[in-house]
Image (cartoon, rainbow, N blue to C red; front, top):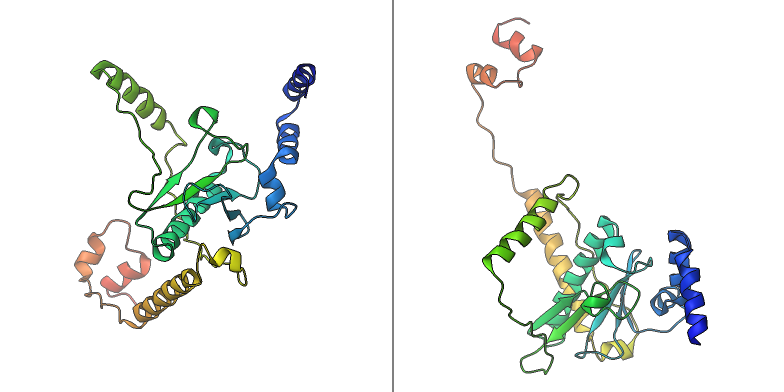
Length: 247
């Protein structure tokens, strides 16, 4: 594009509504085309909310890109339910990589915004299998900071987090990872053993659940009538009538 065309496009984008901008980004996004099946990719996992593919330029063999099917540019745009789900899937993918790719660790990384190194306009989570001396470097600089600056930052962050709506206890079920069938190209990276590991874990959890159901529940010691009445808010009219001997 010429400089004039770039400026024209910038002006056009500025005038777009949030909905129009999102639709425009989706049309330009290669990962949205992958989700739609218009572009080929090495899929290793898919469900109703997200898709995991192998990076074609991996940091290490088995480097996975996990992305939501809906187009979001950065993490703050994702609904909380989708974030919960995606990171539970990331946890499972990390576990599979550790068990099947002879990895001794994983990096689970989000580049959130251009300043953080985000290159694609589609939010994603990187799951990178790691081994000793694999040559992949994630070295963070250790800078010095004054006590005054630390206190100021602490006050800003803790003060914002104390506002209503930011604290929430989230409970999400871990999704079951099922690797695609009949994909020899994928099995070179994630072998068939990966599926067996996940299936074995699933059967083990089923057996544990069945065992827990069969285990007899401990009988509760009967409460005395006196103690039953002492419990504030727990006595109903039937309890009172029974204690007083009224039928």
